[in-house]
Length: 223
Length: 225
Image 1 (spheres, each protein chain N blue to C red):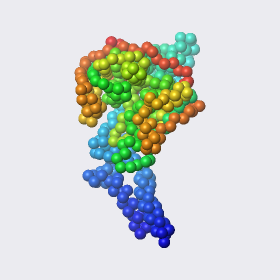
Image 2: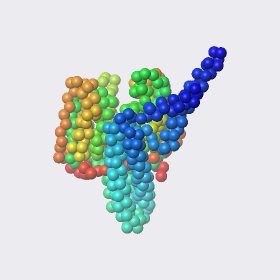
Image 3: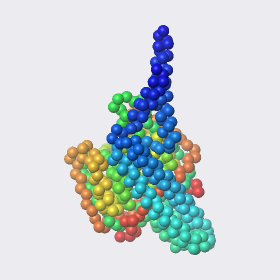
Image 4: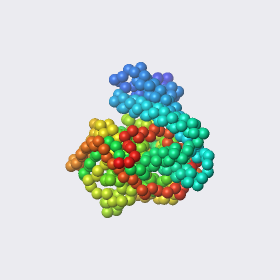
């Protein structure tokens, strides 16, 4: 008697799960992945995707133009084109002095290494094309850490408060993005009530180069 | 009774997925638009990847094999490796991160892998000397940001789903040492222990990390002062 009651309960649970799975299956077959919950979040997702696509279309355009120029030039890149390309890529890597309009973000407070790392992420997300922290140019591999004495280090070199970020990009866009409600600065203010936050827009900022670049000992081209 | 349970399960899960403030059809419309934009994005990224690859090989094709030109070419390859514009391979580590399964009231936030978890793991592998990094096939470049929309993580403007695989080429001994150092990823490891969230590094002899396929706008930054 107990046994059959148990199996009835078990069967019922199994059927319940089956019911849920049928729906899940149904959804998967539609190839529509779940959307973020609120209408606001869906709007953010839609605009992020639309923006990304328009940037990608522009990229396809400039790569196609570059391709056409090579085609014109016997199908290969000549000396001039190679130099131009090298300078472009070195600029992305922080190895060329750059200037442009930008935003300054000054933070003074007991921020930890991960907080500062998140600020860098926030600036990249806001469309920053080049970033410095306390005058030092950031690379893809740049990391903020803390040593055993509590000293904050950027790429192994000590940096002191206040933390001063400069970002080249559309000053309004960058500032609006970092100051947005629910953004990182709002979270910081909650966590560090005495944190000093200052932003300023500049028509022109100049950034130096990052000379120390790691060598490749393990990675090799795979093309 | 059993049939009732199936129907109940059906209804329960429908209820879960339906926002009471929106009609099913408008949600469906948003989903379709998102899907459309994502298909378009994938298409564009493939085109960007193909064009860059073509340019790479044209830049490496030699017309005149003079020494200065060869030096220029190898410098260009090196810089493109740094910028993430060339596929690379080598030994390294793959860290697999997945949401925990031990659900109980109030811990939903704790058992999910968040955008900041991915950022922390990626920062750590750079610190450990990684030479190239990707997550779920998205190359990490100087302009990459990792953020979330709701509970979905976006990398290079693409939505990722768990499990997240962070691949890092470099010295695997150093990469594993940093990962297991108790001073790093403390919070992530604690959550892994408590909620079954997966965060496991494995050594890989030969990893391939694909080139970045996104845009590289330099609309405001100009060379020189």
